[in-house]
Image 1 (tube, rainbow, N blue to C red):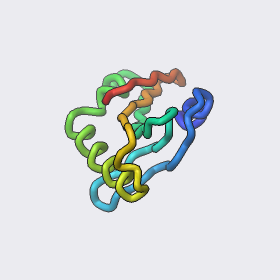
Image 2: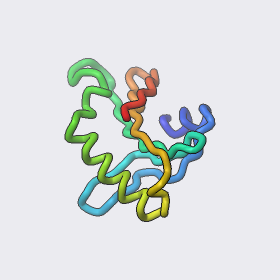
Image 3: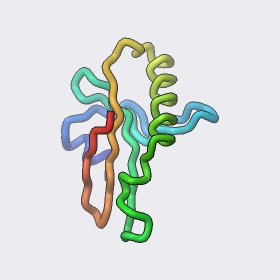
Length: 100
């Protein structure tokens, strides 16, 4: 659902579920124009655990940054502009949030 949403917005998908060993994983790596975007997807079906985007705290962002740096290095994109986004899905509604 998140992948299709990003494609509909003109993003180019570069990788899905990119794993950097024990460092962690990024759900979607894509390109938005000249910028590489690392997307964390969070989904909730109810209110029991808060809003989906609330699950992306400082510790999770630090992990995503480390994985992003590995991806950029492995793909010789170190000089590229990049950012972190969150796709929050709740009750089949999508919210796209730029974090960093």
